[in-house]
Image (tube, rainbow, N blue to C red; front, side, top):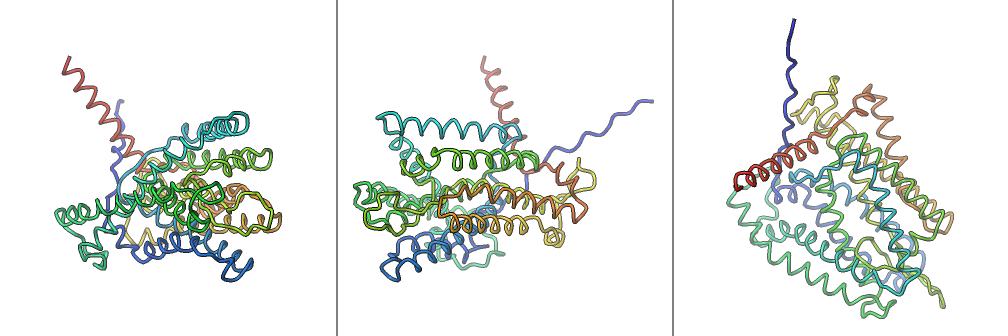
Length: 404
């Protein structure tokens, strides 16, 4: 007897949400977090209240920016853009990061070359594009008088295009002004900007990069996510605890690839004048939290070869993985701050965040009887993006063949 099993359906991309609707859905969070990013590090907290106020403001700032950016950045996956990360790519990412970091360290430490200028140029270029993309719907809605339109009220295609076009030039102009001002540099390195002002400009650009990255990163599977987290856990721990590589590169090369907060400096203290939270400490855990949000959206079917998409709003609300991941990230970040306070030394944040995320996700799945399904989970968003990329490649190859 012969039969042919039915092939599984090709993955379909999740429904996309227009940019203006994504912004209106979390409008007050966008406005509030943008205000914190732009204003909080620009204030001279030491002049207002001394060291206690500086320490409190810094703790509030890094906590609010990190958790708020992960939350809002992950929500931006609804825009429909995706750059898939396979398990193989996730496994080699720490190796590539180690080679890059080590190369920068060797150039800084043992040569007269200045890799910081080139690194800063490309980081600023990325920040210019990312920040412009982030601001475009916000400014477009404002200029069109539609900022307070309820999120449930969808615009037509023409209205959406009109709003986005209206915001394009102002968003680019504002972003370019931020980059130009940032390029003046801080007074600590002979630049023109006071430390708080430079930190604020740096953080605005860094926020744009983080939000853009979180909106497009799509881990292929839970296995890929775990491989990425464990690999970068080892990377972070080694380069902070076992060498001075991370500290040297982070303090010698100035680029908007980290969040800064001006700290108190005693007379004669020539050390780095900022407290630092790396973008990787936000983007890498955020990519994992993004996958957990997809788990809520897709569902964990008893048959791990199939997806339960589309799910009802009630079913998505009952699935806790996204908020468990967000809480675990906050817990791990808090552990980093506690360790920093106790040791009075810089800490590799991923050493505290990664175990918190993995334990929370696995424990939640085990408590719901879904551990096997979570371990076997594959992202329909990443699969759809990979399939679309394959089709485009086949189309280009067919066109080249036709032209011969």
